[in-house]
Length: 125
Image (cartoon, rainbow, N blue to C red):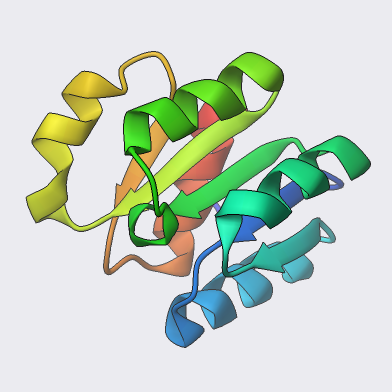
């Protein structure tokens, strides 16, 4: 399994789970990537996307407090260069993926390992 991803990419993570937060931190900082964390996406996400050059947005579906498809569509239309990785439970997946086709670049089911995360991010870059 690949142990690294592209160096020097900027990643914005929206996830409130402390265990996954450690996985993100350990995985991305080990690869010398810049990582920012948010736990409440609605207002802060729009502000952060305007202030910083973000390459990859990793967002846990549970952190989206409004219609997921509308939210993801707005983010992608305002920031078409950003790759979006949606984190979700397998039970939530079919309907959301069908409705959000074209808005997300990939998805990852929980629980996941650091290696799963690396491979998934590499695939969308």
